[in-house]
Each structure stands twice: as structure tokens, then as C-alpha cells.
Image 1 (tube, rainbow, N blue to C red):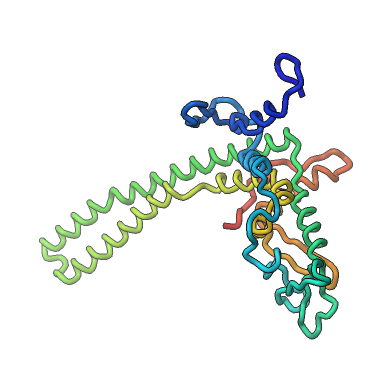
Image 2: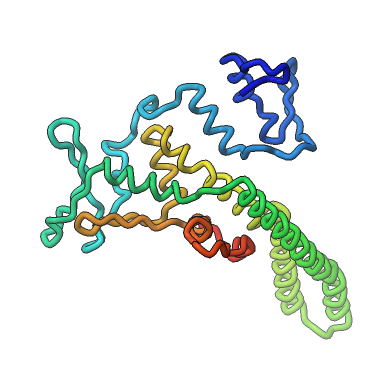
Length: 295
């Protein structure tokens, strides 16, 4: 790697590059440390940038005290009886997870093997730069579709909200004209006000609730850097990452099965189809539209 002057980049220069958030789409002022959103196209995701910062600051495995006796405590179940596997240490350093059920004597797995399988599962997310860009483009189109749908929904709610004053006025006229008695009037007025509150709350949640595209984009960025994050994570961070990406982990005998959450399962299947199809036919990235993140 060389600089603009065609000289090799020094270690200090490389550190400056790796610490610069410019490549994530942000511009940071040196003097004030203020950050602004740039108009340039980001070269890397924020998740990948944060993962690099963890490495630069030495946050590797073992630097944070583990809150658990074992990394995967109560995270792996027996495929036969459904109970959690119990972690145990042998010869002072080897960790195994074993089912103590009477009919599951052969269900046992080493932590090293379990760790390797999880790492291999997360490594299934392999995006070429053009693939990741295509996926981002699909999510951006999804954002446009959701914005249009949200605007339509907001318009409908505001129309309903605008009708409440008319409905209340008609109800008051009915009371004045003795078409309803006081008790019925109060009952119907109370129901109208309650309904109005539901509409107001629906409008508020519509404006504050993140869209499906936001969740998918965060998941996409996490998937891109999941394998790297897992390799450099401390035990607590490993647990958090596994919980975020995996919905179920079971061991039957010596066989490990890791089930990914949505949309990570769809992303893994998509990248697998790209990498394994000998014909070169690729599953369209538009399939990302069918993803439903687990919240």
C-alpha cells in the first residue's frame, strides 16, 4: 500500500487511516471532533469500522471479566430431551457441554468444537463488494416503498382524526335536540374520546417506530462483519453476538445444529446459493424483500 506520493504508508499513517470514520460516510473535524454526514459513498459499514476499533484498542477475548462460568452456558440444548447442556471443565482446562438426562448419555460436545461451528456458521455471510451494494440498493428501494405506505397510512389516520370534532359536534346536537339522554351522551362521548386517543397513539408510533428496512440494514451490516466480530470478541461479546444472530443451538450425540434468526438465515442461504451454483445463475437480491427480522 502506497500514499499519494507513491511512498510506502507508515504504521502511523495506517493507524490514522483505520481510525478515520471518513470511510463510513462521515466527516470529522480534527479541532472540534464534530462529525457531519458526508455526500460521498461509504466504503465500509459502520459495523466493520467499530470492529476494527475494537482490535486497535486491544479489546480481545479475555479483556472483560466473564459474567458466566462458561461461554455458552444455557445457550445450547440437547436435541433429544430439550434440556440445556451443562458446562464442565476437565483436566483443568478442557471445557465440555454435556446433557445429564438419563437417556442422553452420549450427548456431549467440546467448547472448542462448538466455538468452531458457530464461527463457521457466521462465516457463511460472504459478500463481494458488488453483492453488498446490490443488497443495500434493494433495501433502499424497500425504504421508498415503506415510506409511501407509511405516508398513506398517516393520511388515513389524520382523516379519521379530523372527523372526531364533527362526530362530537353531532353528538352534542343530538343531546340538545333530546335525541339522546345525558347518560347515553356521556357513554358515547367517552367511547369517541377513547377511539380518538387510539388514533393519536397510532400516529405517534407511526412516526417513531423504525421501519423494516432500518432493521434489515442493521442486520445486513452486522452480517457483513459477524465472522470478524466473533473472532475478536471476548466471551461476553460472543454470547451477545450469538444471541443476536442465532435462534436455536442443539446437540444430538456429537452433532451440532445452529439455526439462524431471520433475516440472517435468508442472507446465509442467499450467499450460499451465489457461492455454490455451478451454472452461475444467482438468486436475485430482491429476495431480501421477504425477510422478516426477529425483534
